Image (cartoon, helix red, strand yellow):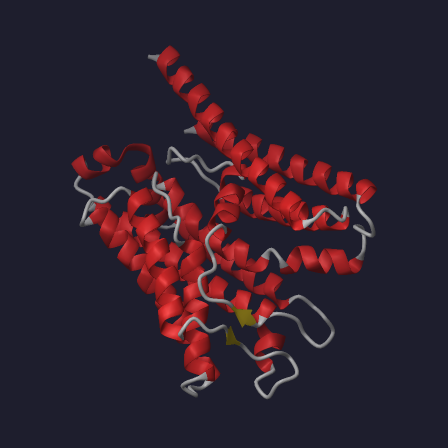
Amino acid sequence: MIEAVNKIQLQKLMAFSALIILYIFFAFMGRNFVSVPTTLNILASSYFIGFLAIGVTFVIITGGIDLSIGTVMMCSALVGGQLYREDGLPLWICLIVVVAFGTFCGLLNGLLVTKMKLPPFIATLGMMMVTMGFGSIFTGTSSRYFPTILENDGWFGRVFFKTENNFPMGVVFLAVFFVIMFIILNKTKLGRYVFAIGSNEEAVRLSGVNADKWKCAAYIIGGFASGLGAIFYAATYTVVIPNTGNGIELQAIAAVIIGGTSLAGGVGSLTGTLIGVFIMSVLKNGLIAMSLPAPYQTFFTGIVVIGAVLLDIYRTKKTNEVKKVKK
């Protein structure tokens, strides 16, 4: 246990060091990278990815995966936008529906994995396609718009995006969400069982614990986080386009892995995840500061994703070698 904790601390230190090195690199190579507008852009592009990453950390620690978080986020936003713009419901009700819809999708993922015994990859891949299609069907393949700061419901943008003084409110909400989830993961029964299931699910079952219930709870948290991410995505961009969202989940999952959470399960850290989120955000804005076209940004982001997975495989391999030596 102490050894695992030490490895997590080392990984967080390495991730933080990588964040500093990356920032320094772009400070020298990018144009006007060290500036207030760029800093605000880094924070703004971290909002919804941060919510997704924190939520999916719970799932990955159980040894599972959720490939649907990106499309669930977009579909949730589309459902809320449809109810607001076309059906005329009050905005605050629409926002509750957005979060509820994301949570419901998380519940479905959990039930598919725990009750239907589908592999998490297949279950969430299917949910990815279902939500992508449902968002287009529900809106008639039309984009949906959320209020800007200048509209009658401009409170939406000021509360969830930026104040009139350009203060990034999303940072505050992300920080609050992080603290709550940190407490849940590290100080509650749910968190303990999430780690235990990822380490040895069969042992958890043999001890008389309903492992399916706690594993399903992890997917529900992932869906809930996707719903929250949908609100901040809508507040940031105001326009939500159907048939989008796939690919966003890779950024969140990469951030989780970079932060030290193992795809093999049983090991993870929300602090590391948050550092990973900012690494992805700095990378995105740094490449823009270097005036690289969008294909280059996608290319280098893909390299980071591959590197993160290879790093996790290496960590898992070394851990298994140590266990064999001890035996």
